[in-house]
Each structure stands twice: as C-alpha cells, then as structure tokens.
Amino acid sequence: MNNIDKNNIWHPYASATKGMKNRLVKSAKGVYLELEDNSQVIDGMSSWWSVIHGYNHPVLNNAIKSQVDKMAHVMFGGLTHQPAIDLTKQLLEIVPAGLEHIFYSDSGSVAVEVAMKMTLQYQHAAGRSEKSSFVTIRNGYHGDTWHAMSVCDPETGMHHIFNGKLAVQYFLPAPRSLFHENYDENETQEIEAFLKENHQNIAAFILEPIVQGAGGMRFYHPNYLKAVRDLCTKYNVLLIADEIATGFGRSGKLFACEHAGISPDIMCIGKAITGGYMSFAATLCTKQVAHTISNNAPGVFMHGPTFMGNPMACAVSLASIQLLLATDWQANIQRIEKHLKEAFSKLKNHPAVQDVRVLGAIGVIEMKEAVDMQTITKAFVANGIWMRPFGKLVYTMPPYIITNEELEILTNAIIKTIQELFTAKTQKTLCTLR
Image (cartoon, rainbow, N blue to C red; front, side, top):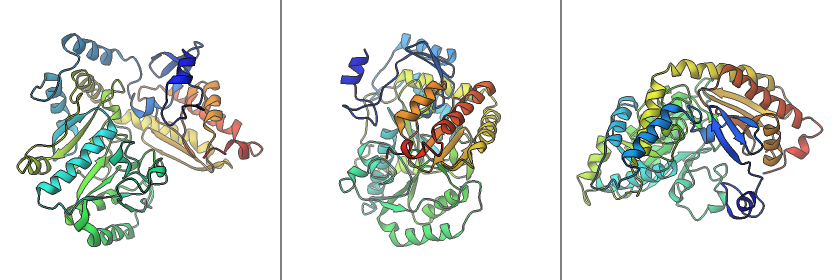
C-alpha cells in the first residue's frame, strides 16, 4: 500500500516524485489519530481546521448513517429534500443579518468561485458591467481554484508561479492595526482614497474577516473590517466575507464578522460546516444580490455543481451545527484560548521565534525563517502530536473537544519540538526550506 501511495498518489502541495513520507492513519477517534504502527498522536490541526467535534463522533456518525439509508444523493436541479431545507433554516438563524439566500457547493474554493461569479453577474444585471474587477488585501488566501487564486496574495498565497496568467486584481496593503492593538484611523483614509479613485471598476471587496489564514495567519483589528464595510456601502462595492476558515466559532465568535458587528453582501462558509465529515460549502447572499440576478436577463444564476446540496452533507452539517449550539461553545473557545496564550508565551523570547499570537482556538508561532517541513513533522510525531506547519508558521487549531490534559500534551510537545530543533546550533540548518 505504501508503494502505491509513494508512486501513484499525488498529495496536496507535494511533489509527485520527491514527496514527503505520508503516515498511514488506521483510525481516528476524539482528538487522536491512530497510525500504522499503532501509535496515537493528537491532531493539532483538526484536519485543516474542519474537525471541530473530533473524530468518530456518535452524533455525526448517526446523522450520516440515518441519511444514507434514505438516499445518499439526488440532483438539486428541479428537486429538493428535507435535509437541505432544515439546514437552510438553521443557518439563516445564526448567520449575520441580511443574508437570506444560500447556494450550496462542494468545497470552500468553489464557494469563493461562486461568490465571485455571483458578484459579476449581479453587476451585469444591475447595468454596471464595467465593474468587473475585485479588490482584496495582501496576506490573504481564498483557495486554489482559478479565479480564487487571483485574489490570493501573489507572494504569500502559494500561487506566485501563476502571476501574469490570472486575472489582474487590486491589492491593498495588509491591515497594519492588529487585533489586540489600537486602530490606526489612517487605514480608513487609505481605503477610502483607493475606493474613491477606483470604485467605478470594482465589483466587490473580498477578504477574510479578522483572521487571515493560509496567507499569513494574521489577526487584524475589527475597526478595519468595519471601515471596509462602511466604505463598500458608500462606494457601491459589494463586500464578500470569506468565513471558510473562521466560521462556526474558531475565532471566538460564531462568525468572525461579529467581531466588527457587520454583515457582508456575500459570505462563504465551508470546512467546519460538516464537522469535517464531508467536503461541503455554501455561498450566502442578500436579497438584493439574489433578486437583482434573478429579475434580469438571463434570469437565473448560471452555476450548478453536480453534488450541490448533497443530502448526507446537509444532514451532517445540521447535526454538527446543532451539536455546537447545544454547548457553551464560547466558554470552551475561551478555555482553549487561555491555555494557548499561557503556553506559547514561553516561546516569546526564543531566538528563533519572530512572534507568538493567539485568537480564539487559533495559536500561531511565527518563526524567523521558514521551517524544514519533513524534519519538524517527524519531530512532532515522535513527540506524540500531528502538526502541519507551512513557511515560517507553526500553528495549531485543535478540535474544540480537546480536554485540558490533551491541550497540555499538545502545547508541551510543540514547545519541546521547537526548543529541541531550533537551538542556536541547529537553527541555521533547520530553517532552510522556502
């Protein structure tokens, strides 16, 4: 099996010929992954931020099992089903006010594509076809599909080799005012100066609210997001909030937009929506967006994924959301945040560490140099945890069900690994992969 994996399976962000060793997972339960050698490691990544309730959860398992006995899938064109209706009702009760229409798709990146396509069709239907470009901020990341790549940071967004081939968009500097600092009002003036000059060409402003994910793991000030919302309204530019990584409690709010008290025109959600059980996502929009598209030629939104609104995905999403809402999830996120802050403060003065930052159930250790993925991953596994750093960033987004004892094991292992590998003697050789 391992030869097949090595020789024939192409893994994400990896070479087909010189890939890293991939560890075989036999099973998973709670926060633990059981590896081929029967060892167990704590998953500090929630399988790329999605498995918020841990693995093999009986409530989510039952939702899948119950639905598959009724129907695994049915086309969404001309048909509907109760899981989609129930999920939609639940989502509309919790998302920011004003979002009234939901378009389901099968991955976060596709949800962004849908949002951008929806924006352009909206502007066309409104008689403003000249508004065909997007503005975003540096250090952002919105997915790996084609149009989504055009609004990822061309340097930190992992797609620099496609520069010159993608649609050219507008990029503003990354927000300077950080979450726990004072807000610089000059940033509002800079955004307004840009929109005042360019709004005639701009269809939408797309960003990740508060937390910039794979483009830099930065946490910026809520007042910046509020300023963007106000200025988009003033200059007739739609606001797209990419909540794929932040939705469903990760930042300490159910949706990160709530930190600024704003509502976008379009919002993308994914990852944790199913509790990490299936690939599923959604693009939500206001009545104005949906009705403008629907009441003007061609009168329909020209998009329709085959597995749109999959019944099993809808059923497990509803179960996951209800499971989250049934708990004191905010207190739980605060518990994780408190532990991460206290634990990672021990690394603030480490000579190889540039910065330490925590928000909600997100802990980030930014190194001064990029890490050697293979070396550090091997060390993490040896210390009993699964972590997947990238670039200079060693970060964790643990499942919400992680206990205090498991959190302590996780953070102690992270600290131990960094202290073992990044001594003054070894720092130069271990921080080499770029």
